[in-house]
Image (tube, rainbow, N blue to C red; front, side):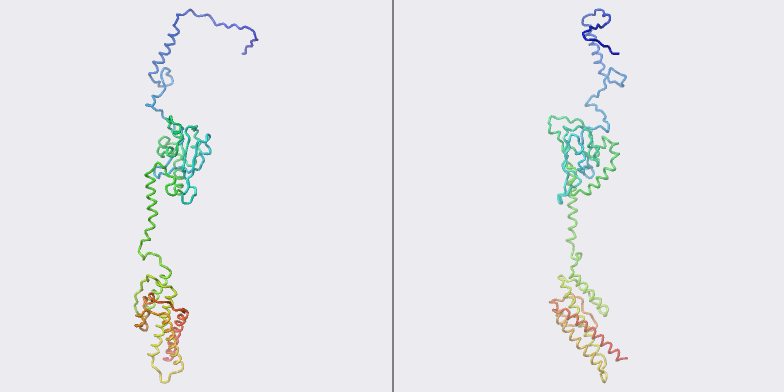
Length: 395
């Protein structure tokens, strides 16, 4: 109900009958009684909300309230105690979403290549301007930034409220102690992402700077890993990779040993030379030696065959071919000189030249390698024709 009072109209208010006259100062005593009653009740604690004459306060700092897990005060950064690596990858999500723009960070870079690394180099939060909204913790995709429960941050120094990464770092066990349920929900995903990021961090980048011992141990481990591959360089010469010249010499020695084995004689395999000659030089010398042996065998076979009373024309031609082959082999051998011992004691017929002789012959290669190969082919063909001629004669 609205009462309308015109301007200038007098309104009389009935206050009721006035109480009897009281003794002066009696009201003051009544007020003091109320104060005394509440003061006496402050010495006991209320056990419930039905009690109105006690107190509900904590005896701080001896008694502290148990804060809920979702309580938020100021942001902190988490790192793994086992590896020492920080969960933060400097994705800049928290810096972008911060309403008062008090978060500042710098991404780490590989010193060798200059490429960005999923780790944070610098992280700064201005606690004096932070509004504790918790947006940074909600938007972080790696669960690296969380809200702390510590509220005793008062200080007389203003600069002390600008907090750097060394003061922001907290181990995972710290946050797990103040918020076990909330960390259990994100633990598996956060640790899986951390292992993936560690593989992309070279050297000690991404490790918490306050873990000096872990950083030193990691550097010693990396130095030992880089020094390990240098050990094979000091291994004996047998384990090193052969050069193309050494491979050619080793192959020539094997071929000579196989040829000697087929001929019925035993030849010790030659050791690889310390300074291998070129492959073409050794091949030419080996061809000359083989040609000389083939010619000698053909000549001895012809000399051992009984001469008929009247030598046919084909026999003469065979002998002539053997003589020519022998001369050609001799020329080829002179073009690729063998060792002095081999020249004084030539190998017997039917035996192959020693492999060491083929592999370690000193001197310059023949000027005309093609001539030596051609001499070897001619000697082989002449020996073949001589053998066919004797077979035809015997039949």
